[in-house]
Image (tube, rainbow, N blue to C red; front, side, top):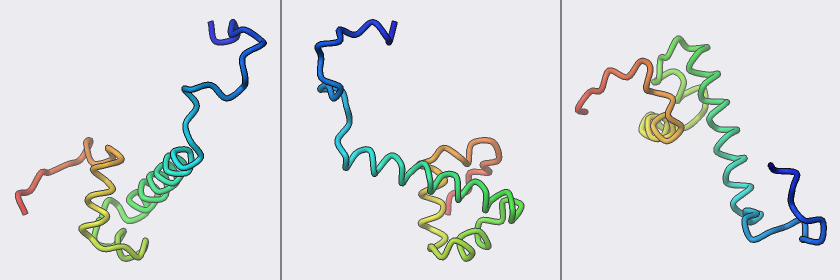
Length: 79
């Protein structure tokens, strides 16, 4: 199990992410949460959500894709 690590090993192993990586992951998680909340508030009106979040529409679409948020209601348009 997870608790069976030898006590003499240092707390930070090779598997520990760097501070930069931790920050990146936390930032992505926070963005994902904010985007998800805003999309729900706007009824998935992405133009309005982007405006409310003060990012471009393209940036929002990219972030939705990165966060895997668009799956459930993605009408994939070619534009």
